[in-house]
Image 1 (tube, rainbow, N blue to C red):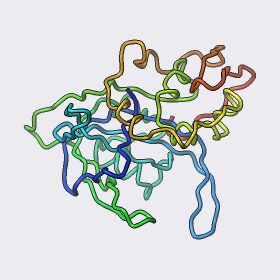
Image 2: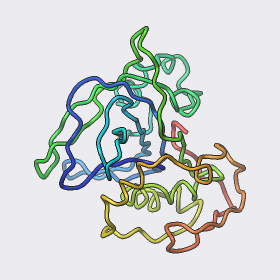
Image 3: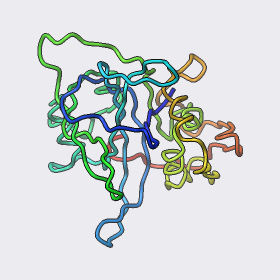
Length: 247
């Protein structure tokens, strides 16, 4: 399926340490609002999703691999987390960042994640990605179980993938100016949905019908689909919305 966000009262954060992982998802969140110390700003964001290929948990008597994700400001600066993590992982980003393509360079690529635990505002612990490194030489590569995919506003399967994302990500995307420019308004998904049920569903491998078909579909192509079983969203065709810095 799509993003695996493990939530609920029984959720335990991933223990701190190094884990072999595969990047299986890239989500363009568009321009998002940020609030820090009373100041409001707006910046393009991207979410990277990783499958921990040696870590498992049990759901409905089935063992499934754990996943984690991180949201980055989608800009390459010398001090940005995205730049630093990608530089330590694949290196070549420093040579030509203007022509760096996330999908080509990292989707389906193995790495070594450094997981750290941080406290949320309510005091609970959450896992976070502190570092990304290449696999040590000689370490066997273990493929991901999740079907790799990219969500970007210009892709022809954007609405199809959008509807598979967790509610909280869906709701962030539909208020971005990039989404509004491309598709117009859409109703948010209810926050009262059973998150544990949704997360279990998200763990299932994506079927051929829901797999990513094409990345970089024809710009301006008409595409009408049901999103979230709530309303029909149609791609606008008047103008193209510039993508974020890394897309």
